[in-house]
Length: 280
Image 1 (cartoon, helix red, strand yellow):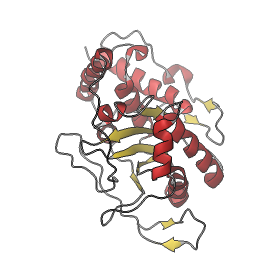
Image 2 (cartoon, one colour):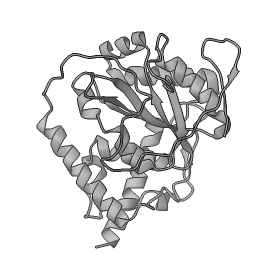
Image 3 (spheres, helix red, strand yellow):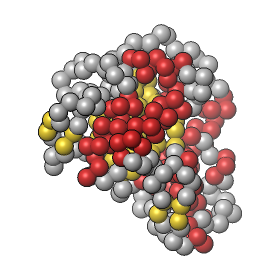
Image 4 (cartoon, one colour):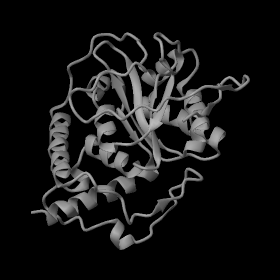
């Protein structure tokens, strides 16, 4: 399947195919993508809080419980979200079905879950109507995000919102995680609500947000890579794979979930929580 892509610098459009690759499996055999830029960073600090590790451990255990119940937990009944603008307007088909009771005891309350669980549930909420992405930032944008007083993720999200509004005329639902490999390569994985017809414009917007000056270092590498989001759970785990390393370098959170996507993530979790209670 070919999609038309537009260069971000306003030059004449060039037609090139985008090869859609299969989603990585949710296991330890995942290999590092070639679409990750090689930018060295100083040695990492070992200052990771015990609370963060404990929260992540609880999230992993809860996710294993959800997977045992079944991977078919969806957001059925939650309805649709109006995303024409950045306002928090949303419509729910059946409110009483959208947010199940939070009194089921098998899984922790949503408020007590950590970034891993919230990110995973938000990714599941987008499954079937989104594309996964990988972004390599240009050197100036990367430097700005690393030094931004509001944190790396907030800085990047503002550029993404601005670019999406200009190119698409709206800000779709999206989320992302900042990763840093052991060799010091920093990059972003995420997903964005989009149709196939919008894919070229989404790539254009994300390229603008990523900043100028990025240089290709290996064959097949691109600054922005998009593919269909087929397996939300697997892509969420892959996206968070090296997040702990990134948190030692960046300020603020290493994950970002759009404000209008968070209620859908919570509704997805509460459905899993309800199923967990019924499975006892």
